Each structure stands twice: as C-alpha cells, then as structure tokens.
Image (cartoon, rainbow, N blue to C red; front, side, top):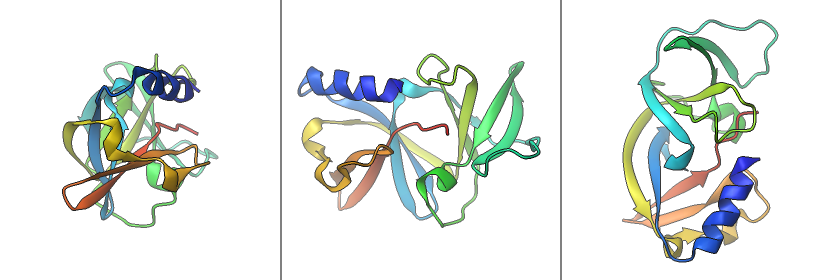
Length: 149
C-alpha cells in the first residue's frame, strides 16, 4: 500500500513535522496525513450498492466522478454513532485501488503540524491501521492510515 511507503519515507525524513487533518468519529478524535487527502466535502445523498462489503456505505457523484464512500467506523471498529456530516476524499494517486474513495466522518476539526516526538508508536506495534498516538494538550489523537478495504 502507498501508506507503507509513505511511513518509510517519513521515518527517513527525521524530525520534520507532518501536517495532519483531525476529525471526529463518535466521541474520539483521529487524524490522517494530509498528503492522502484530495478534498473535504459535505456529506450528501448516497446510492447504496447491493451486496457490497459492510464498510461500503454507497457511492455519490462528486464533480462527475463516481466516488465510493466508506464508513471508517466499520474499518476501525468504532462503535460510537455521530452526525456523519463530512466526507474526506482521498487523492486517487495516493491510494492503491485507483478509484475515488472517501470516508464519511462525523466532523472535521483542524489541520495541524505533528512532530515525530509527539507520536507514540509503541502502543500500536503490529497494527497496520494505526500509525501512532499523537500526544498533546491533555488529550490523545489516534493517527490512522487511509485504509479503503
């Protein structure tokens, strides 16, 4: 997956901060490397796809492209419900499936810089979905990889 290569590239980069987008799923805050993100749009009407995997919410037309919308709560095992107001659309160049894919999230908070010393990777060893836990300001943010299947 492209994310594995990006993680290797970032590790080789040393102490450079990475810009991440923080977003909410239920009561928790998560983040993604903004290099994977093409745009953020309001959640709209979706067309369900019969017999699709459980994590696929449906498809929507986004500027003439059929965009597959995925529920990251299903992928990440998050049980909380929420408003589901925004869609984070991934850059097709950065994902392996070659199509346009987005995650439906409850809300989008901010873009911020995360330095390597703020990321604890020891608690997530062996988990391909989680890059690490970002520590700061009396809270933890789970840094996830942009999984699409």
